[in-house]
Image (cartoon, rainbow, N blue to C red; front, side):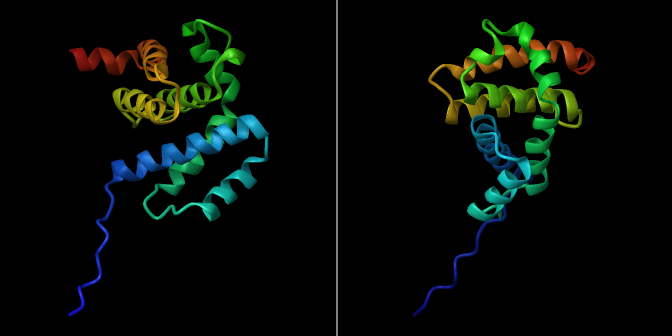
Length: 155
């Protein structure tokens, strides 16, 4: 008797987006460290990784958007740091850039989702307490750039 082939459960949109953020973090880290062209990194990730369960469009938007808006993003969260942007751990920097990008450029993403997803990335990829740092910085940024949304939520 042979068993029926195992059917893969179709991932939810949330799971696909979480995967996109995870791959984007790794790609942005690579871009920050190695300085390779974004198109090369984008193509390399699509070839080297199984992205069937990933929102590939979001992955690409985060990678290219963070790079395009790097100065604006860094300037937005810099006032909430306890050190210079250049002194941040590269993983923390990449996570903060993704979180800031989503807070500032993707208004359709609820601010709490943007922060929580960044905190989760920091828990998985960052140093032991980096998720707390990321949470504090992005929460302060959200208070400024998503003021109306936060106020409406507290209503």
